[in-house]
Amino acid sequence: MYRDAVANYHKAELGDPTRVLFLRPSQLPFCPVDFFIQNAMHGTVRTLDFGGCFYTRVGTVVHEVMQQALCLSGKFLANYECKECGTMHELSYKYECCGFPTVYHELSINYKGISGHIDAVYRGDDGKFYILDFKTTGIAAAPKKAKDPGIVYVEQIEAYAVLLELQYKIPIEGIMDAFILRDNPNKDPAVFVKKLTDENRTVIKKRLKGYLKMHAAALDASTLEEALELVEYPRCKNPYCPVCKLPEKTLRAEIKKAYRNGKAAGHVPIRGMAERAVAAKKKRRSK
Figure 1 (cartoon, rainbow, N blue to C red):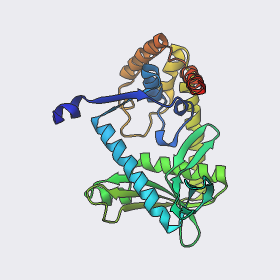
Figure 2 (figure 1 turned 90 degrees about the vertical axis):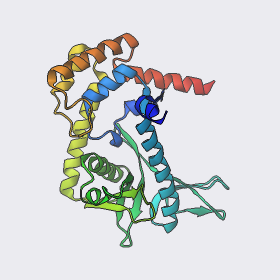
Figure 3 (figure 1 turned 180 degrees about the horizontal axis):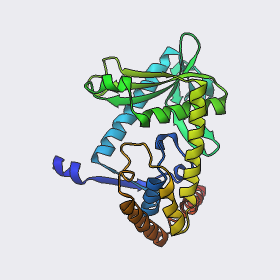
Figure 4 (figure 1 turned 180 degrees about the vertical axis):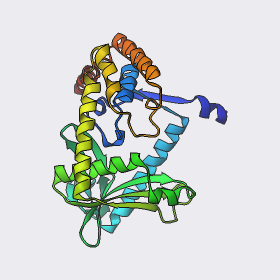
């Protein structure tokens, strides 16, 4: 039964359509072809297999525990909500109010078409700020993660750092990935640290500008020709991307299939589909 569940279980649910309309740092490195195919084929429905469900829930629990436990140090800048008096202490370190622990709320990013949430903003003893992401790993993989967490994690946290500076005007000294050990969380996490320089900032801003262009092209592709033009962008650098390793002929065939199905289902153009879903969601809430 267990092996059958691992092989065949899939959970399907409606995703948040607003997540489609905005570029999200968690999507980086961004692949316009994969984005188009997934949304054209499935609309706002999101599916996870057994492993995806397992790791998503483990990751959620780890984030909740880390944020609530570590914020007691008074070194994590966030929005803290008091459930007793109802006060939201914005951009503060107020982990306690009315004699009770407050609820930690991640700082949100909503900047020029890019949206997301930052795990943590850590203030060091020297008063300088670091963007911190919580991840999980096994003990065996921890040393390698501390040296090089991979382009996916690095691009995502670099984006958060620059976007936080732009939106909140808070200077960021560096970025950190803390890999909590799934095998033994009592042991110290593996931590990757990188200083943020002006040269880095220039590269990251240019990269984000390019991703926004790709995202808009995938959202607005309304003809087969426009959808196929997405292939002309450079292949993304995500080693786990399901489409970028395909031969171009196969890739074009997948785009054509997604386009035909998407047109028939009303999912193309993707922007229109997502905007209709947002409007429908608001209408349901107003009833």
